[in-house]
Amino acid sequence: MKIRIVVCVSMIASVLAMANLFVGHAQQAAGTSAEQTGGSGAPPLSNPLRVALLKWYKANTVPTRFAVGKQPYAIAFDGANIWVANNASNTVSKLRANDGATLGTFTVGSGPIGLAFDGANIWVANNASNTMTKLRASDGTELGTFSVGRGPFWPAFDGANIWVPTATSIYKLRASDGKLLGNFSVGVAPTAAAFDGSSIWVTNDGSNNVTKLRATDGTVLGTFSVGANPLGIAFDGANIWVANRTDGTTSELRASDGTLLGTFPVSVGPYGVAFDGTDVVFTDDQGFVTALRARDGTKVGSIFSGTNATGIAFDGANIWVSGLNKNYVSKL
Image 1: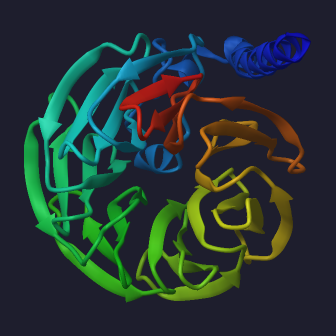
Image 2: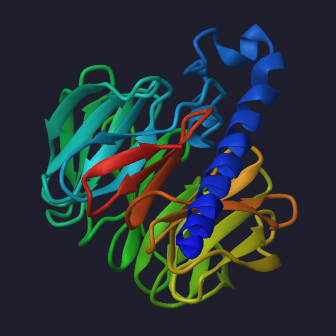
């Protein structure tokens, strides 16, 4: 009985610590100007680079869970709502970020697994049908479906174009109309992409490295070694963070030149990664959500989300993670 009490107290303390962490982030934003907060807490969408860099603003925090489709993978934020790719349902769910209310469920291609927001539309990577579906974010209307390479995964938006890793290369589509602008070779088994303001970074799961490409023309600017089986990737405003799934670490690379700044322990099987303005936050195979301080890689805290977690997104105040085997998303 004493052991059970100690475990419960430890879990409660961990949850409270993480809750205070996110509440603290929200409180730091309380003093921002009306121009920064955009009134409702959502950013103005007039600057596509701000959207591409995921520069959202902070609001309030309410930890909870919301049901979505089967096997939710990627999550994306559109400035007001959360979108979830339901891999086994061939749908995406749209949830209102402030209260989690379901605003719609929309049919897409087969095996949706990755999402990106372009300032007006949601792009869905359909892993099993080798396509990208473009949905109007305001109402979920399908605006087009575009063929890409085999097995598209986690895409990124660069302010004008959508970049989507496929099994053997990365495709560049013009966001306005889906026109194919290029197909570029990277490493083995490219998986996820991120934009740093001028370049696209791609994790190569099969070659244990990341590739940096110039966004304007796809020229390879460098290939940099990281840990084993890199998957998720995020930009913190200065550096690139990579989730190394097999060795349980993250690699921090200087975005300007790819210099390795550090390798830090995260958890067992880190998968997705997001930056919340202060910390870099990871999901993992065990269901934990772990935050590292971006300025030095120190572990801030870790909480259990309820099941193995994959996708992750930040909405300006809260971290959202997908519960793959429980068909829900958690708002932390």
